[in-house]
Length: 265
Image (cartoon, rainbow, N blue to C red; front, side):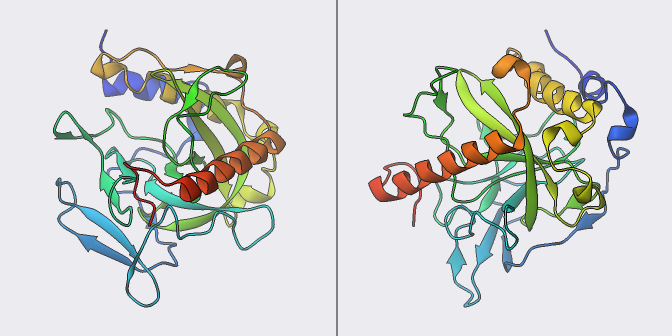
């Protein structure tokens, strides 16, 4: 069964349209990166890469060289891959040298979502969901990527920016049999950051929108619905921080053990 992007939009907006910014083809991006970026190739093509550089102008890895923890206690650095209200499926290329941001490929074609994502999306550096470690509760293995972040603030964050965020909760998504955690976070300088300190502070419409968007987003490609652990509930901030710490430990082990397929410096 196939669903159009308009149907996906209705699923994501279920509950309260005020929970999301209005759809815009040209969102007003907020540029927040503290790391020099270099654009290689043309955006929207297979050759496009967004490369991070250090202060000396030499390439660095957003996955391995940007610290996990933010400048303020209890915060984290989010690498923004996909700005809100956009469709191109951009991601840190874990197998490429220096791990630039590139557009994902599927069956030889550039991958796009079938409708815009309603939040800023990215990952936490220095984390890894271990595909060799079985989760004791859900009995499935990690998806071999850094842990994902869904940032629910009001601004569209620029692709490649590194944003300090406050974790609020986490959803245990199971995608094609793999565990794919979705951390819900808020930018520390967003007006809502003072009000949101745990997942129960987040409106139900926002949480329902996130869950349903990720449940349905692959169905236009004749993929099955994604499922969720823990009775589809978001875990609280304390549990979220434990999971982030676990994925950081997995990353440290990965760096120590090495890998034949992932680029680790």
